Length: 198
Length: 413
View (tube, rainbow over the protein chains, first blue to last red):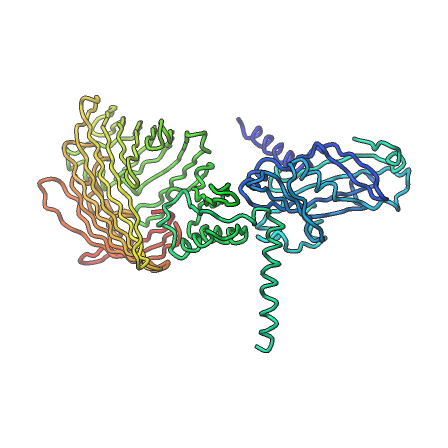
């Protein structure tokens, strides 16, 4: 392989690492004036994360559900939340708790149910959005590095600004970042009996 | 002190709340730790306070924060290693077993400077090795090096290895090592060769292929047997290819103990034999025996070490098999080309070293000579700094007249 080929391959590898991940499909629905989503194909309890959970350690995930009206260049609404998931070594079931908000944790969940629980907890108040205005929704999930984000204690507070900053950063590993998106959508369409999937 | 009553009321509440929060964030916090094990290292190499703290969590509720802090302490005691926990169900219900794995990074594939050294008399030595990630029980390695320190020659080239780490049982291993080097010689050695027609000739290239079996019959004991097929292209007195094919055997013992006063003792002993024989189509027939014994005593930040080595070479052997003293590990302060530019077939060496934190002093004494000659012992003294694998030191030969110090700096020597 000559130098030009090596340089081309390095450039290509760099571009691949920089480009956003291909989005997975997202289903949006309206409930009590809030936009909620479900992402049945988004499975983040996999790979190294799953290994950590099966080794008895809790894993903290940061989620962001964002809405943009111009095709995702600027965010019009967002909901960010942190969840701690742990795996019960004896029951072989998952437990999930939303951090920074009172409420009982959900326990004895399957992997799919634990993932869905996190996504279901996110909501965007869309009462101010015009019914015919097109919008795009994007769901992002990241694993928090226990060394970098909040130390050993998953409960230590993380500000909203820090969470937003977290989502604007490139991850070290694509294994620890998941994205699903949908759009363009309109509230008018979502108010029909069936939501729209992209 | 006026508010002690308030703290007395508040503290148990805070602790209970902390435990409850812990249980909420990690569902396993309700389980009791049944046992704690450390794998990948001998437990006696862990400091006594840490070992005690590790055992202290047995019988307690599983606490991720506490485990993380113990892992952090293990990482600081074993720098450069990967330390991670594995928590599994215990033998009894509602109990968990904790295994802390201490692994070398090479297990995941690693690039490491096996040796990087500057020696003011010998120049630079560099040995860069790559160990690829294990594929099952198979491990592949590759190295590129230029070494002016270990032998009378500077040898530069590549090294590739394969190791099957389990052959039916973990106590048997199979290895193949291939090396290919170009050689350069010091002018003093070349001058001395001209005066010694009976000495073996120099060579410009050397290749070695070495298949070995390693047996691990008992804890701390290792026995290796194999063959070494070395071919080298001689340069002097005539250009031709010669072979030194030998049966190789190594027996090593390594044991670490800790006494009741928290003194750590480490004893390493070894014997190696390389026997080249005509039956393996070797142009040389010789037997090279090396014995060594190392004892280390560690107490707190103090470390005392003594290492004695002896070697005997019988028959006619190529230059790379001859003993030499006066490098970065033996008779430090002496130049090996002043001590014995063609090496010798007899050697004995002792190193006595003391270390306190990063400071180190050492005293070397040794002799290298040929059979029938009288051995003349040489001595040297040195001091320096030592931190993890990095060392910088100055050593002086003890002799009459002007003694020029030798500066050595680098990694892992």
